[in-house]
Length: 194
Image (cartoon, rainbow, N blue to C red):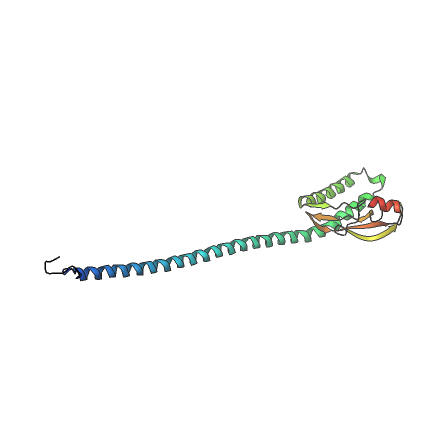
C-alpha cells in the first residue's frame, strides 16, 4: 500500500491482473464445457449399456423360445410316429393273447415275440409307458370309458376291464386307455370306493 492511499480505497494490481482473471474465466468455462460433455457422454454410455442389456435379454429369451419350439417340434413329430406304432403293438399283443397252446413253443412264435419286445423297447426308449387301468378308479385324464357295466362285484366308478391299452409320453397322455367302468347301486361297494 502506498503512503498516499487511504485505507478505505480498494487495492488494485496494476500488472497482469486482467490477463490472469481472463485466463481463469476461460479455464473455468472450458472446465464447465468438459463437465457438460462428460455428462452427455455418461448419459449416452448409460443409454447404450441399457440398450445392450435389453438386446442381450431379448436374445436370451429368443434362444430359449427357439429351443422350446424345437423341443416341442421334436416331441410332436415323435408323438405322431409313436401313435402310428401303437396299433402294431396292440395287434401283436392281441395275437399273443389268443395264441393256441399248440403253437406256443414254435420257433417262429418266439421270433414274433422278439419283434414285439423290440417294439416295446422302442416305446420305452422314447419314455412311453402303459397307463394302469384295470382295478383303478376311473380317471377321465387317463381313461376313456367306452362301456359301463352294472355289477355288484366291483366298486362304482372303477375300471373293470381294459378294452385297449393306453399310453403316456412322460407325464402327458399319448393315448387314453379305453375301458369298461363299473356302475352299481350297492352301498357296500360305494363305501369301498369312497
